[in-house]
Image 1 (cartoon, rainbow, N blue to C red):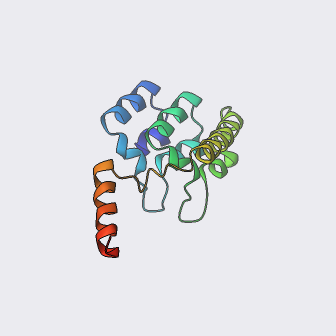
Image 2 (cartoon, one colour; image 1 turned 90 degrees about the vertical axis):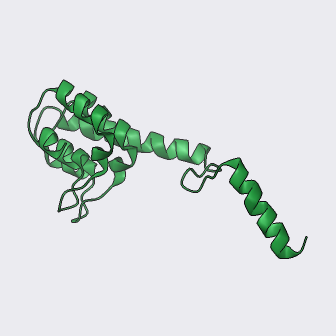
Length: 130
């Protein structure tokens, strides 16, 4: 995926690769660059940007080993897509934060199925002597 993002492969190739290997969007190189960082530095279409973010939305705020975010990578580029990418990423991050604030009571990182929660409650009640 890094190679596809670094070189001007057709969008349908990136789409195909991400459909077959969606977790590849989460893999950083030896410098901590995710495919999104590479794509933002080179300057890709908004469609290609969306493909990468669909696979790994958290990448929008991930930093490289040297502390660069995807927005910072896009700001350094000079292609015709870079300004659009910066605005798109900024809006994407803002909307993500707003959504998280709305649904803050749901923590998907710690969510457990109801059966397990029932078991935990039972275990806690037993431990308290109830």
